[in-house]
Image (cartoon, rainbow, N blue to C red):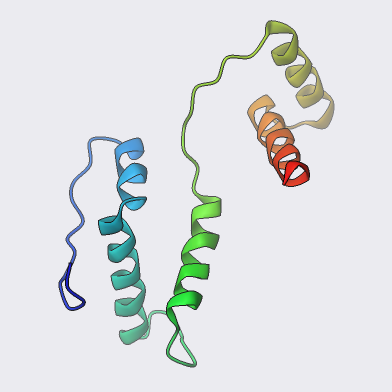
Length: 109
């Protein structure tokens, strides 16, 4: 893909397909292209021309917030424990599971 080529965003059948596409080189190039266009049009303010590293950081931050549906098999006991904890805290059990996974990954690295 040349530096000046324009990347077109395809139509997607579902959100999962769209999320997968953004993880491809074309999806990445489209994101960079869209950020640069928004900056040129004044939709976002850029005090200095952003470096590739700064743009990558913005993309990484956005990607960290992107949710992707996954399937996971859990024991009934673990699922029940998550639901009990969710009821105590007033959160959803999926939120509880995501928080536990996030903390576990933070401590594992």
